[in-house]
Image (cartoon, rainbow, N blue to C red):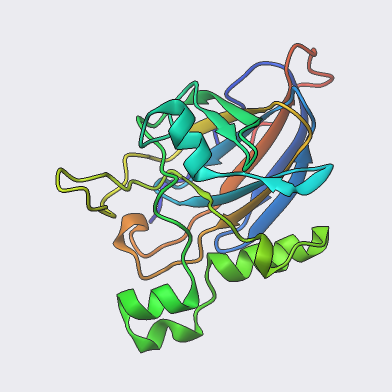
Length: 224
C-alpha cells in the first residue's frame, strides 16, 4: 500500500489555491506574478511533468536549453531561474526538498512508451496526451509542446554523458516551490506511466498549492 503525505505549502502566506491532481490526470492554472506554487509529491517518486508559458503571450514559453545555459548546471535546484525561449525569467525555484530536479529527460508519449515497454503500451495515454488535452483549454496545440520540467524525476547524467532513468530521490510529502516572476500559465501532467518501476508501477496524486507570499492567511488551512 502506497503511503500518502499531503504536506502543505513550502512557503508562508495566504493560500489562494489548493488542488488535488488525481493519478494520471492533468492540471493547469495561471500563477500570478509574485505568487509561489508548491507542488507536493504526495506518494513519492511521482513525476510532475510541467510546461510553463507567459500567460499574456504563450509564444514565450519555458526553454530547458536557456535555463541550463544560464545556470551552468545540468540540474534544476534551489535558486535556478526557469527561463523562456527569449532568455527571460518565468519562475524561480525558491524551495526544493529533493537534491536535484530534471529538465532533460523529456515527457513520455505513446511512441516512447512503445519503444521502452513494448507494443502493448501503445494504447496507454501518456504525458503528451495530458499536455494536449489540458493545453487545449488555453488555446494551445501540438506546436506548443516544447521542452518540459520533470519534477521529482531522477535522471542523472552519467560519466559518459548518457542519461539514466533510475530510482527516484523523492519520497511521500517531498515538495518543490517556484515563484512566478510574471503571470505564468503552468500546465502539469501527473505522469500516467504505469510501466516505470520508479513509482512502483503505481501512479499517485499530486497537490498544487498557490500561495500569496507576505499575505496573512484568511483562515486556518484545512488539515488534509
